[in-house]
Length: 491
Image (cartoon, rainbow, N blue to C red; front, top):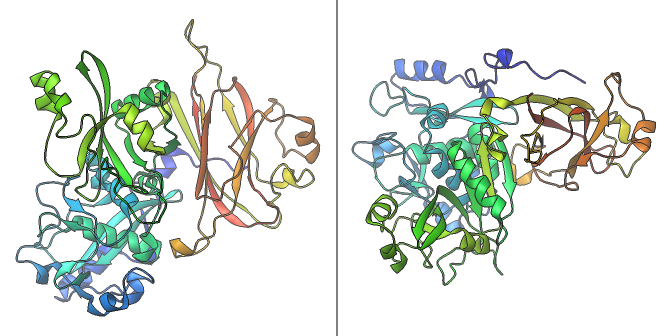
């Protein structure tokens, strides 16, 4: 088993947070210098402003023929990258079905450290302008720096896709273009999961939870997640058609929302409320505790003034019970899994491994007993730590397995069914375990089946000791690369 990359080396290595890898080999600083000194405007030859960049099936032929790629300096009089800081209310969704991406943007605007990482400073339409910008994303274990020109797709002088409510602000449109470049085209952003964008914006721990009515644990988890500065998104179930249909209660089917607040108010008794944001910038919940609900008149003036904003901006409050009835998933992204039990963030440690399945190491799932042992094997130690008297053992292990794409275009990626199994091992065991070990030893834990998604993850409460994690593809001889991230609680 290869050792995890040490934290101190990761901090300065290429692909680290402070030293991102140049995407497609493009050096922003060199390109900016070259074009600024020659008074030219950068044109990105790796993502040319044409039909291919928009991608198939997104616009009708009639609309595609009307598309013009225009720089902000020709669209408005005084273009700016950012006006008065980035806000979740800055932008509205365009003709692209990327609410999952915009929902994640709305979530990260609360944290300036994340925004400063994604949108590097020193960029402007004024000082040393050369028609070139760059943005940063975390992709499959590495930070990348992505260069784009500022030609944006328009029809009749209006941006087609995400646009700012302040007409001369362009950070959302350029950020969207950079992410479209990473994923292959704008069409490759059409449809997705909030969890994917949250991870790509932060590189942090991610987990997906399923709301259920009367689920006391979910409220506790979301409350602690908010206290730990986690970012959260959620999604509604798909309706009878692929269209995003608005229900009579104002909730949109098959749609992603941002969780922007978690609180309680006093209304005779304590009421659990969640604040959500629709990335469309309008269309809000119409039920209890919505903007115009008479229930707000029943709480104190202080609470009403602090929490209620009746603008038609897509943001609204709803009760936890209504949330559980309306939404099918909650995605939480955080620095560490410490919010799971309220432990200090530094009580968790992280190890990350890059590996692959090939003709020698793709043994398939445990259904294939004679070849399962050939899968990659990784060891982890769960230290002995006694819970407080009267308290149950909390989660102490979180495992994430993410497969890398097999195609530059996100929409064409064929994800394999992947999963992982966990076994207890003794201290003296140091070599790779043979087939006989896996037939003689029972599972301690495993992922919930195998899934053909980009990432599978789960968290566990297991006894202190040494364990073996075996990532697998469902079928033998399936080849791809992966990133395995293991978060375990310290002593």
